[in-house]
Length: 231
Length: 231
DNA sequence: CTCCAGAAACTGTGATCACAGTTTGCGTCG
DNA sequence: CGACGCAAACTGTGATCACAGTTTCTGGAG
Image (cartoon, rainbow over all chains, first blue to last red; front, side, top):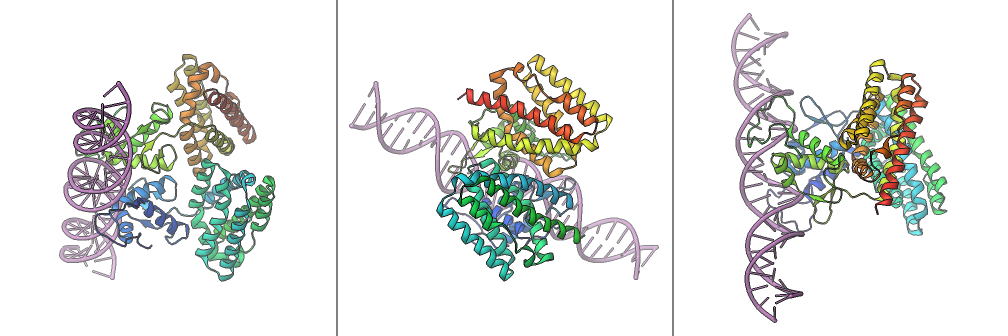
C-alpha cells in the first residue's frame, strides 16, 4: 500500500485543501481490498496500516470503522482483532443475488438520463476493459470495469441504491481477484458492455436492465465456479 | 438520550465485561434515531452527544462514523458537520423498493428453518405489536414490530442480506415516527403478521415471501402518503 | 528434543490536548 | 434603530499517551 499524499510528514498538517486524511486512508485501504492486495483471511492491525501509510493510528481507526460498517473488514468479536473477510460460497451467493437486484435496477433508472457524453465515456471505458483483458492487467481491468458500471449507476439519481451497490462491490472485490487467479483473463473476456451501452443510448430502460443482469449473472457464475474449484 | 451504563464515571473503566463503550454509544444513538428522538434535519455534534451520554468524544466519534457509513447520519461535505438525514420522497421510494426485495427474500430463506419455539415467539411479538397499537405507544410498537421482523430474518442464515435489512431499517426508522405522528396508531393497525407466521409454521417459503411483501408494501404506502401530505 | 512458563511486544480502546475552520453573538459605529 | 465587525465559543480532525487484554517469542527445566 502506498503512503497517502505527503509521504510521512510526522506532524502538523496545515491542509487548507481540506481533504481529510481519514478519507485518503479509507480510499487506500478500499483499493487494496478491492484489488486483492490484502489477501482475504489475513489479519491487519491499526498500527501496521498506519505505519505503512505514514500516518498516526487515529485516521486509520476512522477508516477501518467505516470499512467494518460496510462489511469490507471483519472484526473478530472475541478479541476485537481485524481481518479481511474470507471468501465463502454462502457470502458469494448472497452478494450475487443482491447485486443482481440492485445493479440492473440502477441501470434501468439511469436509462432516461443518458446523454451523448455518457455514451462516449462508456465506449472509452469498455475499450479500456478490453485492453486490460488483452494485456492480462488485473488492476487495470478491475478499475475500468468498476468505472464502466458506476458511470452508468451514477446517472440513476438514486443515492440510496448507489450506496448499496458501492457496498456490494466493496465486499465482492476480493472474490474477483480470485477469479482472475484461477480462470485467467480469457475467462472474463465476454461481457455485455456493448449491449448495455446500446440500450442506454436508446433510453431503453428494460434493455439496459437485461444487459446488466446478464453481464453480472455471467460474471458471478465464473466466480462461483472459481470459488468452488478452489476449495 | 440516557447515559450509557455507568452514568458518568469520569475516568478509568476497568470493564472486564468487555462491552465496548463505543458500541453502547452506537446503540444509544441508533435507538434515538429509530424512535425519532432526534428529529430529522437537525444537526448534532460529537461533544454534545458525548456530554449527553457521559462519555468522552472518542467513542462517540467511532459510533458516529459507523452510523454515517450506514447512512443513518449525514455528514455535510462542506463543513463536515453532522446531521440527521431529512426525509425526502425520493429516499423513501428507494428504501421502500430495497426493503421490498430484501425482506421477503429473508423471510423465504427463513421458512425452512422455522421451529415451534420461533412460532411461539412470533405470536408473542405480534401480540406485543397489537398491544402497543391499542395503547398508542409509539416506542413499544416500533420495538415490537422490529423484533417481529428480525426474529424471522435472523433465521434465514444469510448474514449479508441480514446486514442489508438492518441498514435499511436504520435509515427508514425516522420515517416511521412521522407516519405515527400523522396517521396515528389506528392507521397502522392492519398488518400481515398472522399470515406470515402461519406460512412460516408450514415452512411455506413462497407464502412467507408474499406475506412479508404485502406487510411491507402496505406499511410503505402509508408512509408515502404521510410524507407527501406533510409537505 | 519437548514442553511450559514468563516476559516482551503488539492488539484495540479511550482520554486528553492542540489546532484550524466555522458559526454565533455581542458590542459598537454609522 | 439597523448593520457591520471582531471576538469568543464550538465544530471536526489528528496526535499522543495510558491501559488492559492477547499473542508471540524466548529461555530454561524436564
